Amino acid sequence: MIDIKELERICSEAVTVHGPEKQMNKMQEEMNELGLEIARFPQGRSSLNQIAEESVDCFIMAYQMRSVVGPELFDKWLAFKMDRCDKRLEKYRVK
Ligand SMILES: [Mg+2]
Image (cartoon, rainbow, N blue to C red):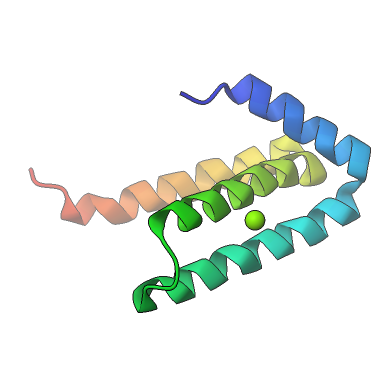
């Protein structure tokens, strides 16, 4: 189970230490790495392990973006997108 408080502490410190601009570039870099792994997967040139690793890199960087843009704004969008996703899934749920 993820310790969200620990994740928050580490990600916030990373943005303080390295600065928002550098971490935004790093976010872009990690998204590109994940995109490459996903593109290579159908051809057997990647693995679920590599996709998991790059996904976690993106997850950590996305959480750092929470510190860059501010937790209030980030959490507002997170709640909105989660709710939208939940509503879109409604039609697939068996009643
Ligand atoms: Mg990476």
